Length: 195
Image (cartoon, rainbow, N blue to C red):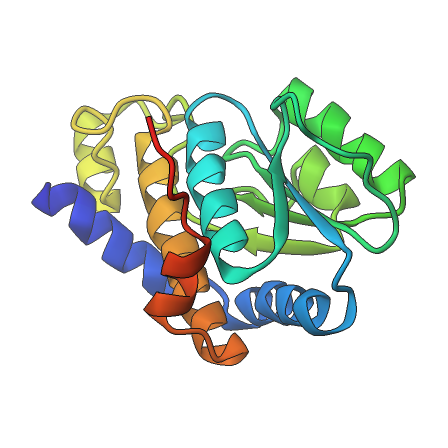
């Protein structure tokens, strides 16, 4: 846990503030100026689970938020935002969905570890979140340790997903401040019938 937490702290120091500001500004603008706008959150596998948690919080904040793959997902268009979460920025399903969002003229925000990835290249806003996405290109154990890559303790894309989850929780906290929301406001929208 300490290794993973340390990685997240180092990553937080590397995330570019101007990228985060663009994302937050787009979400604040939507809230104030596009009340009927929709947000579609897209991610495959564990990135999709992180996206689900974020979409739920967006709903609690008062947004019309949806998750790709759910049965209740309306059409999106130019007043809308699509948020793609893909560590590699190459996940075919998410790339195809991102291309469709762009065709529909939605604003595309991508969270990825690779700013030169196919999804990032077509995005309006990119937030680079560090994290090993699947497999290390560096096979030397000692070199990985010097670089702070601790994949034996966090297999596959875990570091990206963990870091993205914490990052998006931070975005929610920032949105609460900018939108003047209190925890009680979120609680009123929280589900009152649960399984």
